[in-house]
Amino acid sequence: MSTSCAYPLATEHTFRLAKLAGYDGVEIMVTNDEVTQDPDALLALATEYEMPILSIHAPVLLLTHFVWGRDPQVKLEKSAELARAVGATSVVVHPPFRWQATYADNFLRIVRETAGAYAVEIAVENMFPWKVKGRSLKAYSPGYDPTLMDCDAMTLDFSHASLSGRDSLELAMAMGDKLRHVHLCDGSGSQDEGQIFDEHLLPGRGTEPVAEVLEYLAAQNWTGNVVAEVNTRKAKSEQARLDLLRETLDFARDKLGSARSTEPSVGSETNYPGIIRRASRKAMGSIRRNS
Image (cartoon, rainbow, N blue to C red; front, side, top):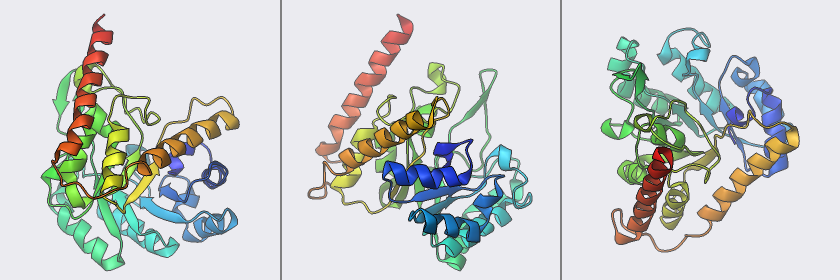
């Protein structure tokens, strides 16, 4: 469970809620909250709640612009250092913004060298195009799709895939064995379909083929991390928030445990039903929006 699931609550609430909901561990999104930057404080929480830290999300959002300075390479290196200090095996990072020119030009080299120096896996996350007044803005460089980069490891985010109009099952298959990390959530549509916000809905509440992707990964005996990254900010009570987190966890365990069998080859016929169901849902969503 990501600390973003408990936003805007303090970091300790993530550990407590993750423990109550029955999660296996947590991902720390590094933010302005100093606890997310402090390995000793994080290890104390991990010990108190018996909840290991599995991954670190580098501070890449605009609201964390000044966390660990302004140099994105330093932010990534400090994230890797933090991961190593707390026993996490992976770091999630977004592609560079276009205006981070020097970092963008050297991004893949920096990622590879940092991963090697700190002995952690750094998984580049798929993002989405930005639009301003209906016009596309090239916000990321070399782009928002890690499958078009020479990455060693990638993170699949369903909400980002939805906003970019990408089918998550096709994206997972395109990532192949470089897919090492999953942000479990959902989305209800793309920017071209009128969606504006990055929703991070609970899995199954949107239109992305989340179940099909998890079943596909389970059938291949995939060994990466699945981390809940859902928006619970509208929950009116702690119990309501806990119910949402348990629903997310139950969804994941059901789908990941339902398809473990012999490994299908990528592109085999066993993958087509999910794509067909996805197309049907998109068609029905379009009909509802236009009716």
